[in-house]
Amino acid sequence: MKGGLSLEEMAAEITRQSKLKEDYLVDTRSLQMEPYGSQVYLHMFDGDIEPVEPMQLNPIAHRQLGTHVKIPAPYYDRMLAEKPELLAANVNTWLQHTPSKRLLRTMGGTARAFLSNRYRRIDNMEIAAAVLPIIGQMEGARFESCQITDSRMYMKVVNPRLEAEVVPGDVVQAGIIISNSETGMGAVSIQPLVYRLVCKNGMIVNDARTRRNHVGRVNDMDENFRLYSEKTLAADDAAFILKIQDTVRAAVEEARFSQVVGLMQNATKAKMNTKDVPGIVKLASREFRITEKEEEGVLQHLIEGNDLSLYGLSNAVTRHSQDVESYDRATELESIGFNILSMSHRQWDRINQAAA
Picture 1: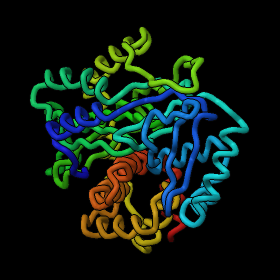
Picture 2: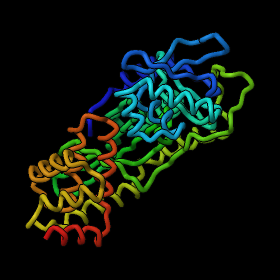
Picture 3: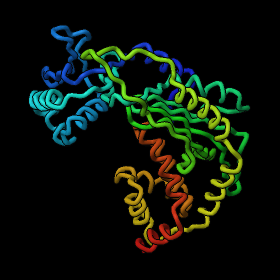
Picture 4: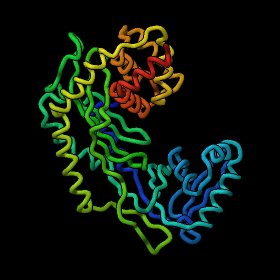
């Protein structure tokens, strides 16, 4: 499992960010993109008055703005890099031509998300306040890895109360991952995970999760824009917070953990066609969207692990997750590891035969 922040560091970062956040419900006709040197800035106008400083946009806000005005991503990126004045002209034209109400999320003077006015804010502070007391009641539970990226917050917790051996000496423990996005990059999600002690791998169990999409009622307004103030949770959100707490309590559940351990034990018996091990890794990588660069690392860990089985391949993927730079991608690879582990016999036979 890729290292991240300690619980104390994450709590401090959530608090720091919460003080810098400002959200605006804005009419797109009051927005204007302007180039300055090699950068572009987003301005908000109320008549002739600019109530906030011009803002830079982070990559997420750029992509969401481009999607909203229907500019294909490759062309948007090319204009941003080579002709920012052309990008500004295109964006401004479509913001005026097809007006709408949008939620603009900012932090520290940077636009970090450009979202629908139906977007329901469920912020990291709310999630942390809901789950931390519950986790604190779990005897022996430890925060193995936490992180806050531009896209998501992650909390990965291991509870050693439930552990098992896949094979003699290979001990795994039950855990849970809680994630949330404040920028429209994913729902609130609670999923079981399995932690392998021998190499500190984490595997996210994808077929058992609780999710809450960030979609709510339409927010409307009469003014050109307004500061979108903090509100108490609506009744349905309050109910979901209670559901999150119940799910966290039940996530480290013995029957589900035993089922995943059984999958792992069966995968140790699904041997690999050793005639072309690199070929099998390549085919599996294509099947599960592992990049060529990541494929090299997976093959290296597979050989070093000396376990040429479906279980070994799955572990090689989750082990390589510790080597990638992006915490978001590392977490995706932890999910891919489970997808590989739980592939059907027919799918595994097909990959084996194709590499023969």
